[in-house]
Picture 1: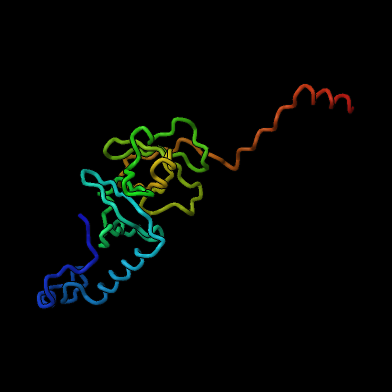
Picture 2 (picture 1 turned 180 degrees about the vertical axis):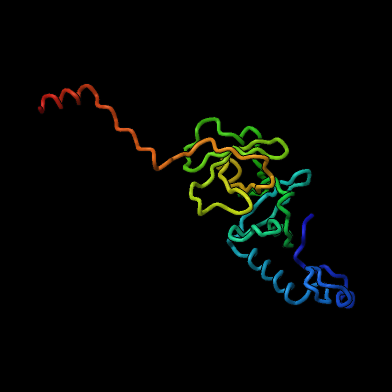
Length: 207
């Protein structure tokens, strides 16, 4: 179920007779306080910092729209502004993954691009995510624990240059998550290059 944040009442007279749709107890369809809050949400989502996303859902159609990367993860779900301009909240338990895309026609990652075929080069935690519906997907998660999110994981997919720049996966969409490796660990010291036979001879001559 998607929860809208706007006022969709039929008339002002009917609105005065019913309680606020947000449940605050006010005797209006949407009280002034919550109407202002909805307008503020639209303004926040309407700035140039919004990103295009495709929201893939379990057993439901995919949604397209815009999110504010700094505040779209709410306690109740994802705050999404559709292409028509309406703002709604999509519950996390309905969401499979959120694809940050350059164009709405790109779609979510293809099956053959969801796993790394070789060890990735991008630094971070190499994760393998197992979805509730049986799908499996790899991603690179930041190795900075301060960047971990409360409601899910933001990862770089195996081929970000092809379709999706970044992907968010809610925790409730997953059955389990496996760490396959740490890429670019600061504890790993670079190997010293081996001396060639010529360099070895020159060292003995110098002695």
